[in-house]
Length: 152
Image (tube, rainbow, N blue to C red; front, side, top):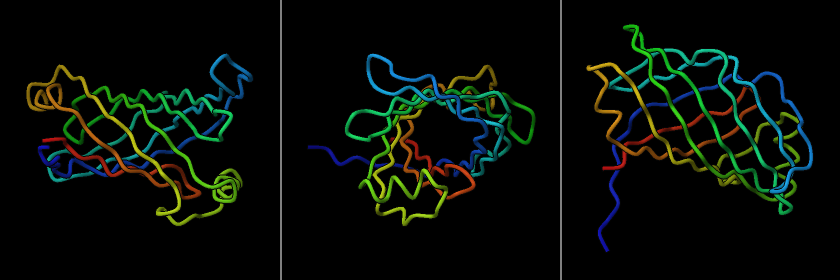
């Protein structure tokens, strides 16, 4: 098998505000998290996360969170980039209870991974349209933080 290689892209910090409990859905308990903003920074791009994004979460019977997120990033030079990702967050019942209470947890105790895609009309950042990103996350009380990598 070929070895998977990555290159750091950026770290993104999200501010998640209101959680909207939709309730029991066919796939599990649906919750929508409204993203109020945030920041991202890496060697090749940095900027802010615009408010209005959302995370359409399904909490399965096993307690795992399936994430479906759409955001708009604004680079420090004014380019807009759509960012979408799907992912999974799970851990022991004790760790998930701490996260739910807003308590800090050791990132190694939480499986938190995402598959990331981008779209932009910017020529400068058009290279993002042609890559797949991978994210590893953790969940401090302030909101989710992801290290996003370009899959080479």
